[in-house]
Image 1 (cartoon, rainbow, N blue to C red):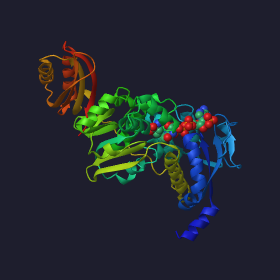
Image 2 (image 1 turned 180 degrees about the vertical axis):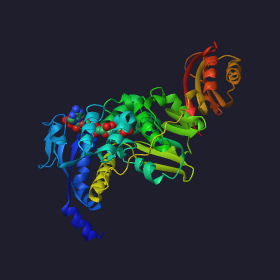
Image 3 (image 1 turned 135 degrees about the vertical axis):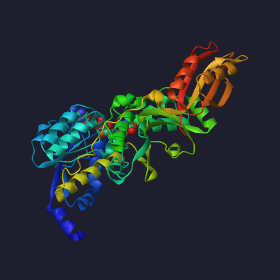
Image 4 (image 1 turned 90 degrees about the horizontal axis):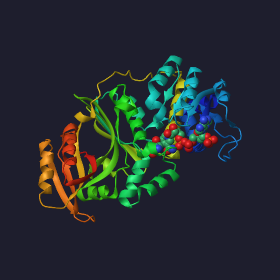
Length: 439
Ligand code: NAP
Ligand code: HSE
């Protein structure tokens, strides 16, 4: 279509939409419409107009809303309005968001959402509902904020067998770990700053305990490996146990600590985990700092690819939401609504954590006396765990020392056996931390 024709089509067509939620992300979407509405209309072939917004408190002062936009607390004003063709959910949490999206799809309205909580638990049923009702259901902002990753996995990489997907997918914890590493900030200070910047979830325990990243891992793994996975399949650990000393040892040994979501497919099945890891400083993900996220994908045709950008925040997330709105708009203009029905999902075997493999960092508080190192090396050796390096440091507690060991790659069940042996040694006072080492 020539530009003039497209402009004509844009002025002839008007697509009305509703926003559910006007918080960090919703207000960002409003701003993107204000600043880029003309480009979006050009690319859609139609003008997209925000007709109605749903909020919890309609009396709250919101300067950025234009006068012609209806602000309501009643979802029926949107679901019963036949003019509204796209419902954009940015409330968060499971309910009422799930209920509103379900009813919107049943009312034959396309849905765009940034809500990984709902997707990780109910994504399959919502996609099916969209298919049954011949409408679109898009969710680019649910993983990696502004980074395009859902569309690349669905389309650009569809000719690959993906064997590994590894990502820094939580902006809050990456921001915190960066502050703790680069500025020596405390856990509490770093968390408060991430909250003030609008990165954290309403309940930030979902960020720091790894649940937010686990939800994103479920979404990524189901698209990358075409399989049904659920939250219980993700071995999930957060960053609460990471202490300044672990960060210091990582630095001394040539690593950085990152919270990674990991999905791998092998003969053992699908391995799924979220955990802090020691990453060598030269790894592409090691340089991803602050609120930035990155998703590293290994495919048998493309080789290695990495997707990088801001993983949270008002405008970056709104960029992905607004792009999905344009995508639905194009489908409306072209008469192709509901043309993506999701890749069919199989049910592949999940690899149990005890069968997964990696190197490990182990930090022990031990009695400072002759023979201790030998006893510890024997405990590892008797469990078939081979040590790559060991260092001993004197710490402030009298007659105690700290031993830091890095193991070679080992199956997790052998590592568990070694930890049991170490716990039973009288010279070991405490196993301070155990963190995986990725190479
Ligand atoms: P938020 O700042 O807490 O905003 C939530 C909005 O939803 C508010 O406008 C609130 O209304 C409205 N709301 C809450 N409960 C409601 C209800 N029962 N009925 C009607 N409206 C209700 O949340 P957010 O950070 O924008 O996050 C929104 C979604 O985007 C979540 O799914 C989140 O996980 C996802 N996400 C967020 C980011 C980010 O960086 N923040 C990035 C990617 C994805 P009031 O204004 O009246 O209180
Ligand atoms: N709380 C999330 C994060 C928001 O910090 O990454 C983006 O999903």
